[in-house]
Amino acid sequence: MDPLFRTIIRIPPSRPISLASKCMMIGSCFSEEISEKLIQSGLSVINNPAGILFNPLSILNILERIRKEQLYIQSELQIHNNQFFSWEHHGSFKHQDREILLNKINSLVQQSIHYNVEHPVRIITWGSAIIYRIKETGQVVANCHKQPSSIFHRKMLTVDELVNQYVIYLEKMLPIEPGFRVIITVSPVRYAKDGFVENQLSKSILFVALNKLIELYPENIEYFPAYEIIMDELRDYRFYKSDMIHPSQVAVDLVWQYFQKTYFTATDQKVLKEIEAFNSLSAHRPLFPDSEESAQLQNTIETKRSELSLKYPYLNI
Image 1 (tube, rainbow, N blue to C red):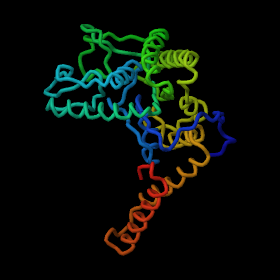
Image 2 (image 1 turned 30 degrees about the vertical axis):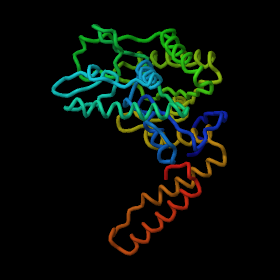
Image 3 (image 1 turned 90 degrees about the vertical axis):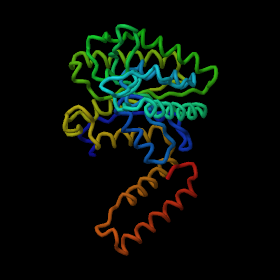
Image 4 (image 1 turned 180 degrees about the vertical axis):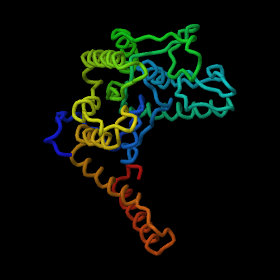
């Protein structure tokens, strides 16, 4: 992309992430995009163990549960239209069988606990400062699950509310993990259903709260400006999907390029280029799958996979 026709975002290199590191991704749908890039690159990633989460308190709820190594129990599941669900999970976590859903949810919690013990790099994407509480219990929900709006109280978090909740969590984590590290991004996706004025206010609260947390914990919290890359550098609808809200693949690819330059050493960036080339080779689909040419291609792919696995045993290739 020609730099003459866009404003370049300058991001200084940060403390490197080792390719052997484990990463825990939690947050909005934008975090899914970056998570997929990390997984394709061979890193060990656990991605959104509670599904896509938008507000910082729901993200914190799952982080706290992982910290406490607390599994879900049957009474925490709700039922509607013969489908069981959890208030702390995305709408994709539903099933007619309560035990199947509970096992799925707890399996992901257990995987996250395993990752947490190994001190992963946590990468969090905040989407919105707007939360929904159940009026009867005060519980913050991750998703309304198409329940009547009358049972919820809708609220915009204040900066202090957000900061205070994260401080409580961090003060519990730091004594057991002094090197605790979290990279926070703010989703560039605008939540049109909230109205664009309220969406902007919501994003502003997230930014101010994040800045305060970085001031309090400069060694543990850092910001990656995915929001600015999309909104300021790629300020054109050609970088959005057809809904004109979500970033296109081209936009995500550029954010990923910035992420690599910010968090991986020059040596590791070369490794990622090798993996990217291998992925391109693997994605090739011959016109005639049963041909000799196709068999040769598969042999080449498997040979290359073996070579890369021996060369980089810490990557999932």
